[in-house]
Image (cartoon, each protein chain N blue to C red):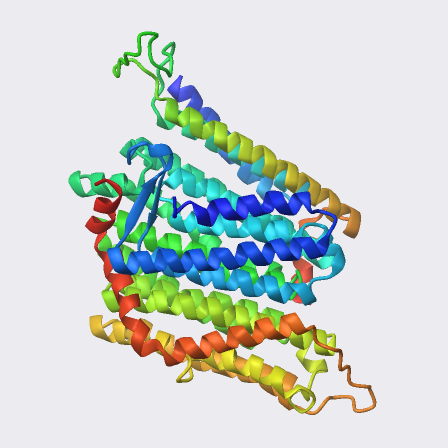
Length: 116
Length: 492
C-alpha cells in the first residue's frame, strides 16, 4: 500500500510539473490541482499507514496507542482540501476573466507584457 | 483573550461590513473604528510584553503541544503595532483615493481580511495554523489585486496567484514532512524535541522546503519574479499596503523558523542565507536603476530591501537581528509612505511614467517633500530611520567579520540613492518636457494627503527617537536568539 501510494504521489508530482511547463494557463491551473492532490496524499502518508484501525477512541474512552491510526493528518488533509477547493475555484474564475479580457490563454503573451 | 483580539476583531468587522454592503459611508465608519481599536490593542500587547516579557495563550484551553497556541514576544508585538499603524493609515488614505466601484465591490472587507491573516501569522505558534493564516492572507490579497478587473491587473494577478499557490503547496509539503519526522506541529514543541534528539540533520529537507516556500512569499532571490510583475498593477493604496505587510510576513516567518528550528548545521545555513541576501539586494536594486515607471522602481526596491533584513538574520547576532527588526519597521513605514506619495503624484499628474512628468516641486512643494523624506530614508540619509537601520546591520557585519556581504550592502545603498534621485530629478525637479502641453494639476483628496503627512511624520519621529527605542529592538533580537525562552513561554 505504501509503495503504491508513493508511486501515485510521484506520478502526480511529475504530471503537475509537466502541466506547469505547458503554454496554456488552463493547464497551469490543472497542474496546481494535481500538485495540491499530491501534497494531500503525502500528508496522509506522513502519519504512518495502519489499515483497518479507527482514528478515534473505543466506546469506553480507552485508547490503544499501538493500534490507533493517527487522526491528525486526516484533519490536516480535510483543511487542506477545503482551502484547495476555494483556491481552485478562484483561479478558474481568474483564468476565465483573463480570457474574456485578453482573448488568449497563452503564457508566452503574458511574458511579452513584462517588457513594456 | 487579549492575543485573540487582533484576529477576532477584524473578522467581526468583516461581518458588520458585509451587512452594511450598500452604504460606503457606513463601511468607512466601521473600518475607522475597528482599525483604530486594533492599533490601540496592539499598543496594549506591546506594553504588556515590554513589562512582563513574552506570554502565550492556548486556544480553547487545550494544553500546549495539543491545542493551537498564540504567542507574543517583543518581535511579534513590534510587528503587530507597525501593521496596525499601516492598516489604519492606508484605510484613511483609501477614502479619497480608491474609486467608488472598488469600494462597493468590497475593498474594506478585503483589507480587514488581509489584516486578519497578517495578524494571525504573526501570533500563531502552530505551523499548520500558520498555513491557514497564510491562506486567509493570500486569498484576500488575490481578490484585492484583481479588484476592478482591469486588463493589466488580470495579467499581473495570474503570475501572482500561480506562484503564491505553488509556494503554499510547498509549505504544506514541508509541514507534512516535518510532522512525519517530529510527530508534532507546535513550534515550541518541535524546537524542544530538536534540541533533545541527536539526528537533527534529518530535518534539513523540510527546513529547505520551508525556506523555499517563505522565500516565494518574501520575494527572495530566485523566487521574486512575481513581485515586479504584479505589485504595480492595482491602485497605489492597495500596492502600498501589500508592500508594507505581505513580503514582511514572509521575512518574519523565516526569522522565527530560523531561530527555533536551525539547531545543527548553523554555519551552513548562515552561508546560504547571506549569499541569497547579497544576490537579492544587488538584483533588486539594479533592476530598479534601469526602470522608468515609479511603481516599478518602488517595487524593485522592495526586493532589494528584503535582502537587508535577511542579511541581519544571516549574522545571527543580537545586533544583526535587532538591526533586522529595526530595518523591517523602518521599511514597512518608509516603503508604504513612498507608495502613498507615488499615488498622490499620480493623482496630481495623471501618469506614472517619469519621462512625461516634471515640475512637481514648482506646482506642489508639499507633495515633493512627502516623497523626498521617505525616499531619503530608504537610501539611508541621517537622521531618518533608514540610516540607523543600515548602521546597525553594517555594524553587525563588521562585528562578526562578514566583510564581503557588508561591502555589498554599502554599495547597494549607494545605488538605492541613485534611483531615488532619479525619481526626484525626473518627476519633481525637471522642467516639464513638452511646454505646449497643459500641465495637469488635479485636486488632491484631503484624507489621502493627511494620511501621507502622518506617515512621513511617523518616519521622522522614528528616526529622531532611535536613541530611546534601539534598546527595545535589540531586546527583541535577544529574545529571538534565546529559543529556550520561547519554548518555556509556550510549554510552561
